Image 1 (spheres, rainbow, N blue to C red):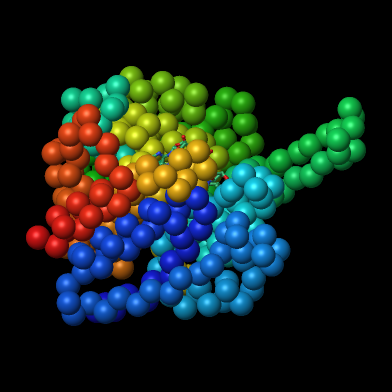
Image 2: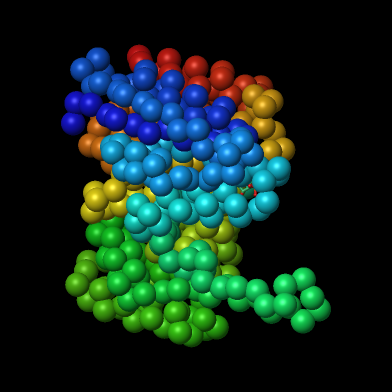
Length: 346
Ligand code: NAD
Ligand code: IPM
Ligand code: MN
């Protein structure tokens, strides 16, 4: 469509810094006739300290009215761990049924990776986004005593698994290599693991052109480092996908480059785009954060909204920027944002 009504949640730490650059590049890449409206939402650590709120109903409702959401990162050492992660980020993913957490990895040129010089690395992790150990199904008995018992139950529904598996087969079928790898741990997690594998095998019969593979998650981490070119599309559980995609980022160019989309493919609710990384309190406020992951998340956002030309233009700008990057010189967050904005406007 010729207008974009975007919700922006800068969030905490470097989230604020990288989102500013993501918006700069977005404004630079959009043609004159696409009207961009942005509304910023004050959510995150400061809001919680001020009001005790993480994501009030009124804001959840308001967010539904946008075409998409751009999020920086949330989480701060001054807030108890989990309060914002569960009360804001996961609440959004669950409320907006973001069952596809799409995390592409390509080997970027000119970065500090042990895999340099292997351009055939190009895979995408389709991480389940609404189930697994993330649902908050658990509890603690006799908390804080020597007899404490804590459970954190992984929830897997046939409905939830089938829809993410189907989405992954569709994506694999649309790519040249047509290969899909299921990653789980069905040698130990025999209930969920076998359900995933059975559903995967059943759906596979409908996609005869897609080559399939299965790996236990521990072995998958080996191949991410030693043989990443063996992967095309990967489908996996929420927690395995979380861990695998930080590793994927580290080996393909760095966490500052990894983009993601929390997608509701039905379009019932807005999808949300964010870098894979967090609020990085260790470098926040110093202009050291690489905004490229956020800029690439903006590209995923544009592609999702049908602006393929502009999405590709951003991705090309990032590749060109990295190719010409002087390995020795470190640039500030803003300098990288400026350089990318200039490139996409050319
Ligand atoms: P993190 O991703 O914030 O940081 C891990 C390491 O990567 C740090 O050394 C950091 O400096 C570095 N890093 C991250 N992004 C970078 C960038 N753009 N450029 C350069 N270096 C970068 O992970 P963490 O330290 O485990 O978590 C910090 C906080 O962020 C926690 O509260 C966590 O819950 C939260 N978190 C939020 C999200 C999110 O909002 N989507 C994602 C992950 C973690
Ligand atoms: C991510 C983050 C989140 C996750 C946390 C902050 C809830 O690590 O987006 O990868 O585990 O999904
Ligand atoms: Mn993560």
